[in-house]
Amino acid sequence: MNHFSSKKIWLVGASEGIGESVARMLAAQGAQICVSARSAEKLQALVASLPGAGHVALPMDVTKPENVKAAWQDLSSRWSVIDTVVYNAGAYDPLSVRDFDLEKTERMLDVNFRGALRILDCIIPGMVKRKAGHIVLVASVAGYRGLPKALGYGASKAALLHLAENAKIDLADSGIKVQVVSPGFVKTRLTDKNDFNMPFIISADQAAKAMVAGMAGNGFDIHFPKRFTYIMKTLRLLPYRLYFAIADKL
Figure 1 (tube, helix red, strand yellow):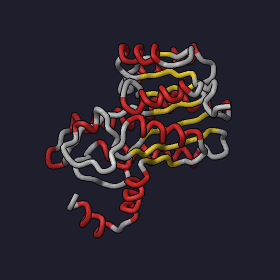
Figure 2: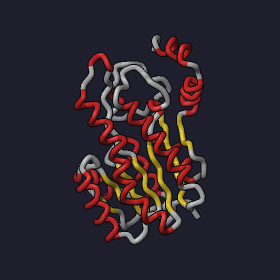
Figure 3: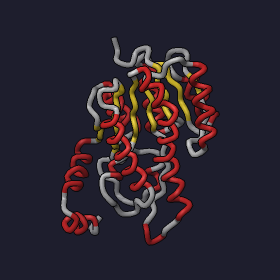
């Protein structure tokens, strides 16, 4: 039997890009999918195109706590059990500290990190009570170390990585599987904003394939493409003097 067959999966941040590709792949493997994002029109079109039956389009703005709670109550009334929750909502603007923009920075922190907290607030109690569940938080290699033009985005993804590590430790032996996903550059609407070279960039479908394969396993750290992410992991180990000397040339 396929790992995801008959699983009920809530995918937050699924209207396009990696999230949309992941939704299609999981549905093709027999999962029942609930997709959430702000655009009701895109979600409804996606659900209508997914293989299988029983999929749900659940519009939601993760920056609005009352909106998240209402969506959770709606989904809970439809599904008695949610097996897996994937937090893939993301906001990104390339931003240097030299051009500090508080509004954009707070927006990225709110979507990328605080939104995840709002979702966890809804799902954790039930998973702990059932002693079962699967949580997937989509971070980024941008959270590994400080990078040029990554104000807000890098900090929010670093916070998400830290949160995933906290959850992994605190939920050990709880029956709940926790995983973090750290993609490199993926061709999406967000990376289209970049005006710099993006080494080893991959398509959303390639990213989704690697992500779904990782979700089927038991490893905590899902990262891709390996030829790039291992470089970033190595940079993570360098002392500051050496790292800053390299970063100045990026």
